[in-house]
Length: 152
Length: 375
Image 1 (cartoon, rainbow over the protein chains, first blue to last red):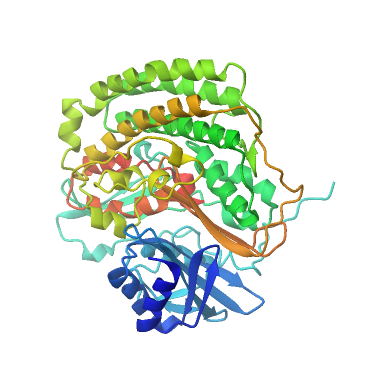
Image 2: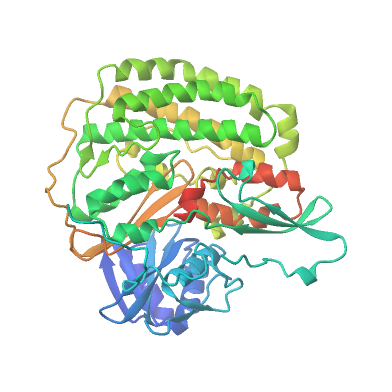
C-alpha cells in the first residue's frame, strides 16, 4: 500500500482536515471528535495492527497541544501518523485504550505529562510521576528544582 | 507521595487478600512494585506500579544540545546501551541526511550484536536465579566477562559505552580486536549448548515454564509487545529483517520464533538469538573493509525543521526515537518509545489465573529493564 492509496481510502470514509508528507510518512490531522472512528477504521479495514506509541507535543506558540498517534502495519509494512490539535487550556480527547490495549499506559503517561484528559479512560491514575508535579513536559513548566548551572 | 490502593479493598471477598511485591524485590530487577490480589496461591488480579526512578530524561533532552544527549540514551538501558545510542543517532542522521561510511556501519553492527549477546547472557543468569537455579550465572558470566572485555577494548566503557557519533563511530577498532572476537566466536556456540543443557532444557524448569503465561499473537500485537517476547508468540517480526536499518540486509540470519507463546518459548527464542548474533558477527568479520569511520558532519548539529521516527531492534524489542526539530541546536521534543514499557503492560493479562510463583517466572521471561520504563 502506498502513500496516496492510504490517504484516498482514509478520506473516503473519514473527515481529514489536513495531510502532509513528513520524511516519506503520511501525517494526517483529524478532529478530536472523530479520533475513535479513525483509529477503529485504520485497525479493522486498513490492517494497521500495531500502535507504536501515543504522545503529545506542546505547540505553545499556536496555543495547541498536538496529540500524536503512530501506527504501523505488520501486514503491509506501512506507517501512518494521526494527529489531533487540542485546545491548550482544556485538552480533552476520547480514549482509544479499548481499541489498542497498549494505549492505556501511553495515555496515562501523556495525561500526566501534558495535562490531557482522556475521556472514559479505564484507569485514569498517574503512571510515572509523584503527586505535586504537574505537566512537566509543557514548555512553560517551572520548578524550584530547575536551577541553571553557573557560568564558568 | 500518596500511594493509591489499586484495588478497592471492600471488593475483596473473604478468601482473597492483597500481597505487595516490591519495590525492593529481587525478582523485579530494579525498582518495580507489583500488587497482587490473591486467592490462596492463585493470582486474581495484578497491578504494576512504575515510576519509582522516573528521571525526566525527555525533559532534560529538550534543554540539551544534540551532542549532549548521547550519554542519556546509554542510561535508559544499561544492559544493551548501544542499541539505544543507535536509535537516537539514526534519528538525527535521518533528519540531517548524513550517510554513514560502510566501515562504521560494520563496527556498529558488531558492537550491537556483542551487546545483544551480553544482555541476553545477563538475562539468562538472572532468570536462573529468579526461578531458583544459582549455578547458571557462574557459567554465563564467564562468557559475558569475555564479551565485556572485547567491548571495553573497543570503546573504553564496560556498560555504558557512549561510542556512537553522528555520522560514524568514535574510534577505529583496536589491533587485537579481530583475534579476540575470533577466539570468542570459536567457542561460544558450544557454550550456548551448555547453557541450554544446564537451564533451558532442565526438566524442573521445563515443568515450571511450559504452558505458563501463554501470550497469544493477537494479544501481544494489541499490547504493543515487541522483541523476543513477541517472537515467542510465533510472530516473525524482527526489525533487523522486517524494516532493515543500517546494513542488516547484507547479513544472512534467521528470525527465531516460538510455537505456543508460553514462558518457555520466550526463553528459547533468546537462546536461539544468541546463536544468530554469532552468525552475524562471523559475517561482519569477513565483510569488513578498510576505510573511513566518520562521515563529514557539520561542527554544530542543527537539523532542519521537521520530525522523524526511527526504530531499532534492541535486545528487548522495538526501541524508537520520535524527534521533533524546530531548527535550533536543541530538540523541540524527543520521545523514547521503550520496549519494556509496553512489554510490562501485558503482564497483568498473562498472569491472571496462574500461581504466585509463576508470576516471577513470567516476569523474568519478559526481560524488563526498569530505567527504560520510567525514563
